[in-house]
Length: 462
Image (cartoon, rainbow, N blue to C red; front, side, top):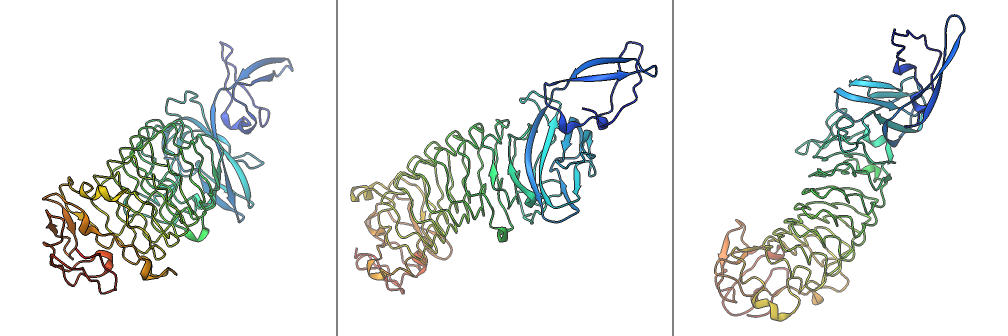
């Protein structure tokens, strides 16, 4: 238990203390009993049983060169008793910490290798604060601030696995918590179990160093099982370029989630997503760029957004999903409050089939947009689609908006200034300006006749 023999000063009441730097912290087990042998100058020997109680979290870091420094990503300042066990053989830097500073939260590893790091806390009640804030995006230096700072994080790039739940830092904003951990390959399914009050996972796993391609191929199904108050999942898994699958129940308990912007942005190995991924998330209002640049995504379930009736924005949702060839009938049929479809399928150059994305059948055309009291933005919704398809333009299924009915305040925004044009009838008689729908331009918009595009595609005659 002790690193060496320790001289003791025994008080009148028989008490004594042992400096924490003399204790072999790495060899302790919480709750275990250890026997101290106390010898006097007269060579009398006595024994005393002692035990320690503490909680711990564990992760692994990998260094690739000698004399590499890793810094525990925790805030500086006073703290309840903690200890960092760095995982090297000598243990000389393992010690109790009551005030975190730049020196005692850092470790220089003499040789390259993989090290198991443990963070111990004297506070064993996991409903209470146990450690200072733990966040790779903020400590030791700010590489992510949730605003304009997105820098490479070389300290975070040493993390390869998270092997236990995180100790409780009492944080509610977990934005950037594992930001920049481009070599992270696995994370414990209960990593966030002791953060029931968390409200944000903004950029939680986002990595800016895409050259490393990120090592995480899968996400634990229960990762957010205890985080029922979260509203923000913006960019949570952005740029995880090795991610190949997403569990169906990932967000099942996150019923307060409202923002799913960029959540899986640029997950370039992701080929499909489960139909019920957002089934319990009825409060979501935006899916902006949700799967943008997911270049391997080749299948979208018809029911993916079926329960998300509060969504207003599908801007860029599938932008540059270049493997996507078709979109299922009725994909947006239940999203009656959605009005912004700007660039939704922009750059999907294999996509040729999407005619019925707003409805399940023709009978719904009269009611689909009839009650929405604002114009629907479809600027560039289909810009760049189908251009590389072997099927060619002949099989291009354009959406025939002329057969839909709109409210008196509805219609579509088309022109370069995004100005709303009212269309109370079922024709485009009020549209007479240049359109950017499909990325082309309307050259004529009479009450009768076809609407012609410079690119050769068109709608059915009105």
